[in-house]
Image 1 (cartoon, rainbow, N blue to C red):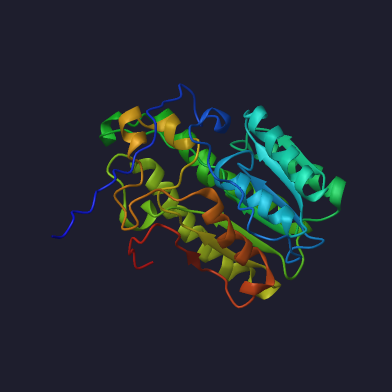
Image 2 (spheres, rainbow, N blue to C red):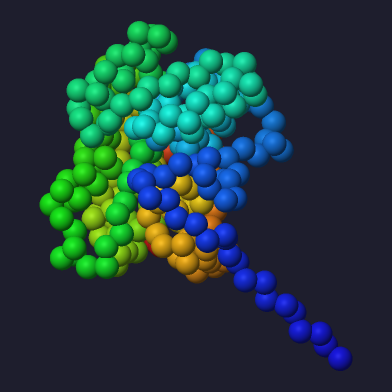
Length: 291
């Protein structure tokens, strides 16, 4: 007699945070931002990297992996000081490499210019720019997206990439890399994240156009378009019941961990991807998006 296989339901504890973009230290369970099975290496030895949104989520995992591979890392964050300090302490304890923290609002161009000036003053140059910070505010119809929300979403997700790239380019030499975080929503859309998906589509076009512009200078521009990933943005954005099952609708039936996304950024930042520019990697749990 055949035994029926028990179907274990994918679920996280009910939770919601009344702030945007949320705090990682409050999440249950905490995102797996570090894979202890990944041994330290030297793929980015001597490189200087700026990572926006590096305090938590995907940015945190990228910052830690970059430092493990020898990079000097500057983390740019809005106001999530506890998360930023935890990331910095983790990096310094694991690698012995000091981590630079810069608290600022990258919606404003002057702040982005100031970020680059601080990094260049300390390290002398920029080798890797990771434009990763983003926000979203779910709405069930376009009528509910205010002009203020629309502008804030585009300023944070898109304008900041223009500002930081413009500021960093004078200090980037041949062999430098720029990596932009888009999303699976850029390719398939999202009925409740219309403005967010629009920014992520803009990032795809920005990445492809910028890569063409900078190819002759030997600066490569690529991107990563994740699917559902367990980050502070999730409990800060959705009701508790949605958070509990977040990511269960993809073929792999779960959200990704940030430590599973970070290697895409390492690949694009290192010489392993030296023949790639204008491209996107798609760690999305198995969704086919033809992009």
